[in-house]
Image 1 (cartoon, rainbow, N blue to C red):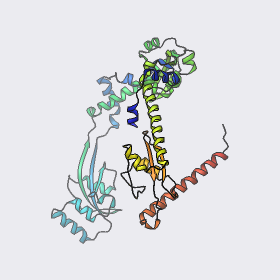
Image 2 (spheres, rainbow, N blue to C red; image 1 turned 90 degrees about the vertical axis):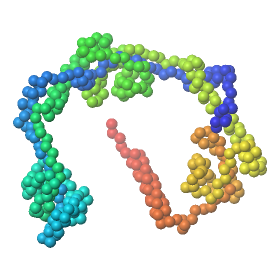
Image 3 (cartoon, rainbow, N blue to C red; image 1 turned 45 degrees about the vertical axis):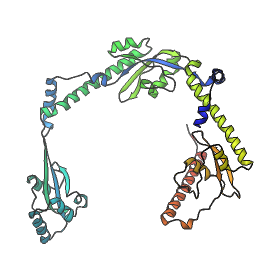
Length: 422
């Protein structure tokens, strides 16, 4: 395709004539520019702070409900019904220096933790049975308990780590500050939203409303009915901007809810009618389209000429070599054979397999290349040569395909017979 494109040379007259004949393809769609006021919590919370006295007062209110916590990381070896000999054997190995983790993998009957060296994670004192928690709380880090009996069996418990979370004013300061700001923001948002709804009704000017609300009136970039980026990318804004109330009557929209506590009011700033683009604006696109069209026409004519030569009796390979064209011969090609253009391979396997003489066909690739394919022989597949795995795979694919078609048929039947109530 590319050589055909490179061979195209266009005159100004050709470009102009193509533009005139295809003007409808080169029109700028209708656009609008909107004024808008956006209301969201970040406009308030990002600029707010609370005083030390407010934070401390809230801390004192919550102090009794705040507790420091101690978490212990436990590991264990669980034996459902251990004999004294097994317990003694484990203790001897521990005394000899073998790791608790290795012994947990070897002896523990808790399949959920054994592969992790018996690690059970952290507990704040209420995760495991009372006798287990009591024994764990009495251990120092890396110390191992005497056997502890619970309903699950007998445990040898090891304390791996202790984490203490101390709750005091300093640790709670940031959380309380955010909590207070969030509360103030909620109040601010409710008040501003109510006032925005009141002032924007039949408003003539959003800038004045924004000033009253201590917000900012913004102006969008021009955008079409397809939307763009920024505020116009939101479907609710797009719908409102091109509604008859906003576009034709020049009213402000109602307050639109955008999600995430974001609200916006829009009003038409400027309407830009659809217009015909000048040739100078679209010359690059015109040249590209015309070049592609002429290149494809040239390629089609050349392809027809080559096919005519083959149909008249010339050998296809000889024609390819005489014209210095790429030619590839593939023997015993399978659907899975690599090194072949996938589009060529797919086309070849769609050709009739019952031809009694060489079959010559042509097609265009997605990139625009013209390809001539000569099918000289077809060998039928032999299922007896497939491996067990290949047969299973084909069987599954057939069942899946059949099931899919049956499901589609059922769905179609249900649609046809369904009664729709509005």
